[in-house]
Image: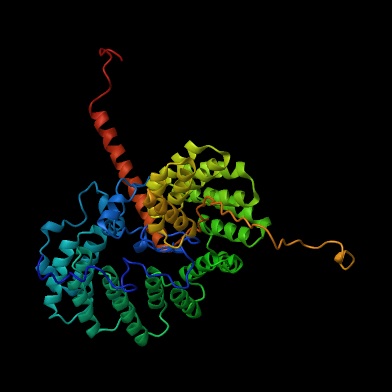
Length: 437
Length: 80
């Protein structure tokens, strides 16, 4: 399309785009901290908007189908499918309000009713088109002077993917009324059109108007986390804690950061704080268990994992928990327990790539080449963004003399994680070998 | 250990070949901290679960209704 408003430069400069995560200066490397598919470090907190977002179409196609859904979770479907749950249910007496038969012009005149009606259509019925129609009629009816309708219009445009229009509405609403909400929505738009730095700027404007607003501070921290700028993210999360010392997200993210930067005992302190605050779920106990183990508090480790398993309600959580127990078993040298734990991790979640990789390593130690190879291959298929299975496969192939596949896999390993020394070494060696031929 | 000071000494060969072989080891995937879920997310998941269950029940009810309309199975039909 020529002269498209939404088109921006194809390749972003480093550090300015969420699609190309930054270099991660000062952050733990991918060798220590697991990454998501987009190459960003795993966050310590799951939010509705940020779960698994494959960046490109190609990535979305490559995304393995999980046990939960048949289709990969795309940015478009991930959140909004969830929100329409109420509209999925059919009522035996027909719908509460028959939308196609409503005369929107009439209701748009009655402001108080229109607002309630809009919220019903937008949130309960999940019918964005009709909601947009009502909102545009209503904003006309009040001579474009009501900021509330502008915000709702912006929300509708956002849901329809018309980001520039949404941006205009939010900006115009801000002229009437300074609200934290509007700033947050505006930044959401900027994040969506991949302009994180503009979003940070807007957040900072909001901070000037509303100093110490934790929602805004969290927003900045999230963006820095997305940009792989962890020192800055931690700085802002700490500032959040300065104003609100029970902020679960901030505590969790800081703890994760400490854990992966080799300070599990400090991470343990943060997680214990969460426990004190009354968070009581499988994830927290799993993390506590891991922190205890790596902070050498062995008496608590297995108790924590036991509790975590007891509290777990879905299979993927149990799977992750068993995977971590496998690590503890490896740490104490109990190979049988480790093997069985990783097996259980796979039983609970058939797509657990890391467990496949570790099983492959264990099989290789036992000298079962073929089985190890099969495990590495499954791990590669399920997690094409990791480097471990590729490197392991390359090393294995190199040992048995299959140099061609060793070369191919070493290459992929280097692409996925350029700083890995052993991969580089192997790759260099093989390239030299082939160039001599 | 002041007594043993003279008896044991470390030996560092100053001559001869020094061999160094780098044996590549396999890499394990790292332990994974689980992301804590936000309250909103938990609520959404709960809502979705409830809605799905209600839909399932509605479908079951419909099937039951259809089943009862067709009447009881006739005895004259051959059994498989």
